[in-house]
Amino acid sequence: MQTPATPAPRDHWSSRLGFVLAAAGSAIGLGNLWKFPYITWDNRGGAFVLVYLGCIAAVGLPIMMAEILIGRKTQTSVVGAFKQALGPRWRVVGGLGVATGWILLGYYTVVAGWTLSYLARCLRWSFTGYPSGYDPGGAFGSLVADGPVQLVLSAAFMVLTVAVVYSGIGRGIERVSRVLMPALFGILLMLLVTALSMDGAGEALGFIFRPSFSELSWDGTLEALGHSFFTLSLGMGAMLTYGSYLRRGESVVRAATWVVALDTLIALIATVTMFSVIFSVAGMTDHVGRSTAGMLFISLPELFYTAVPFGAILAPLFYLLVAFAALTSTISMLEVAVSYWIDERGVSRRRATLLSGAGIFVITALCGLSLGAWGPLSSFTVFGEKAGLFATLDHLVANWLLPLGGLAITLAAGWFLTREATRAELVDGSQPRWFRYGLWRFFIRYVSPLAVAAIILAVIFFGRDFS
Ligand code: TRP
Picture 1: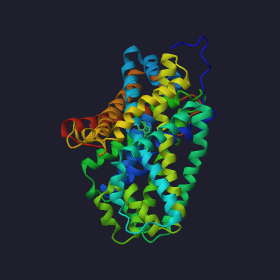
Picture 2: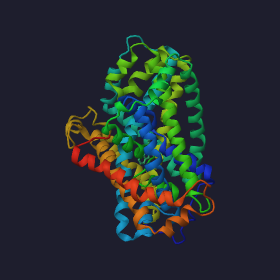
Picture 3: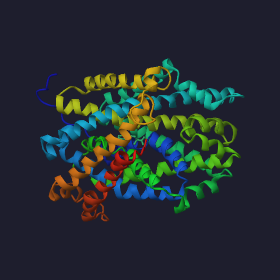
Picture 4: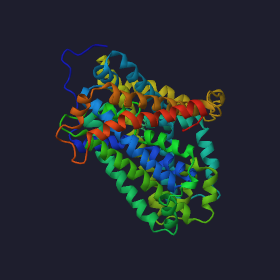
């Protein structure tokens, strides 16, 4: 590991738009298209959605600003950033972020791989027609339990991720995001317009936007809180790392607000779209009710070919969209690990990317085999009923690592960095007129840490599960 004599100048996003598209790409992922719709379903819509929006505004947005500001201020990877901004002991927090990135990317790639399989299936069905007598639940079950197929799919996805990060920030991540994100918005709008023309649209809108607070539970509230974290890619330094490639002079407040707004908009549009389709088909609500988590891979494919107008065209486009969304998220997770090797260890980007990708793929392979293909990996339990490596790691990340990382970040930004330091980053002349520094400071010091602590306490003392 040699440190280059004259370090190359730091790569940067070419503009704020470049940053916003890449960071929104990180935020918009399977969390928006797969998880948000099904937890909204499980929590009976309306009131849950409202609470979720509140959590995004009161907890997500301030922490997003905190991460980006620490990154932009220090211009270095998550480990170096904490060290530089707060002192050597804070390296641990950065290290936790890198470790979380490894684990999260490890299992997220498995699900991302499934999107490739469904893309291929839909492309086939669009030509041959949806097979009669096809059992979607059974087919999904055999897909996940098929070891070799899991390895091939997740390896393919990892190769895509590595290929993007290998080319760097401006020429890799930003360039890909500039193509994939508009494509994603375009496809989603097409789907939305089609779904709104279906009979169930009115009922779907009512379900999602008409709150009935009697249906909201404490668990639902905490779930909304936990999800607002996950969906915004907060708590492990992904946004901090992307922020470290932001030039001074680009407003942290504006950038953060855009990312949060886009992520929220996409989650809502995806949910309106899916529910409009589901409410349009008689009996479908009961069917979905049995396996809400399977909505994306079990209920939806069939609906495209039996109920949705132009479904044969839209189905492959939809899975392409999901794959794009997953890819722009996986690259941000890998970048956290890669930037650590580059900035702290002086390794070249190419080498860091290949080595991290290969190392993380070991976790991915084991996770892929832990859904039935390999008995011992699939059945052990650490956390209650969570059986197997995949479920265990997901639980560890969503319930422990991200909230702990998030708590550290709010405390760092609210209590350990000085008022002058954070103020200089947020109020630098480029901030929007509506921004009030004092309000941000109040939220990051009191509201965000208490909210995040509530998640951690609920997990520790009440055995709650948010994964
Ligand atoms: N936000 C992504 C999603 O909704 C997941 C994700 C990407 C993420 N990068 C992250 C979550 C970093 C936490 C930390 O799918």
